[in-house]
Length: 154
Image 1 (cartoon, rainbow, N blue to C red):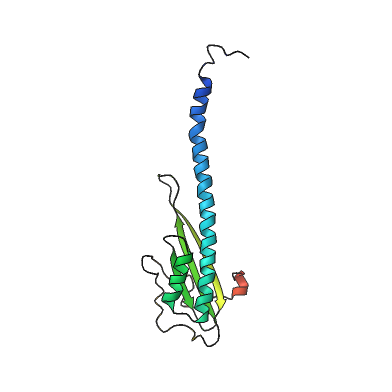
Image 2: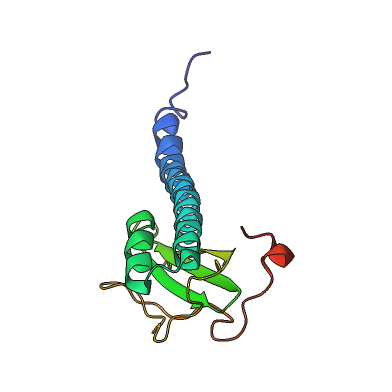
């Protein structure tokens, strides 16, 4: 079909309108994949930390191990009691484009049984993050840690 003078340039105009939308869609897809990857890193780091803390490793060593496995700018919190140990890792995932969008926050929590003879809770576990990272206690830290079989986190 031959283009009429009235149709000339319409393809260029349609492409100019659609292209920014496609770029935005692609950026959102990249952000979603980044968030999923950061979530998996948080889960792996939390499990690693819970196992190490349950063995009775010192908190600075646990934080160092978790920091190596966690995404950048992750916050680490450790909670221990005589029977269970919990580690929570949370990290921001910034948007791929500059704008008014806030970073997504992904997190994971792992709970492990404290091993007998590991000394139970440390005398002075400040529940602060590793150097260069901010942090705090996981929800419920200082109180007894919930039964790991209740939430399926292992």
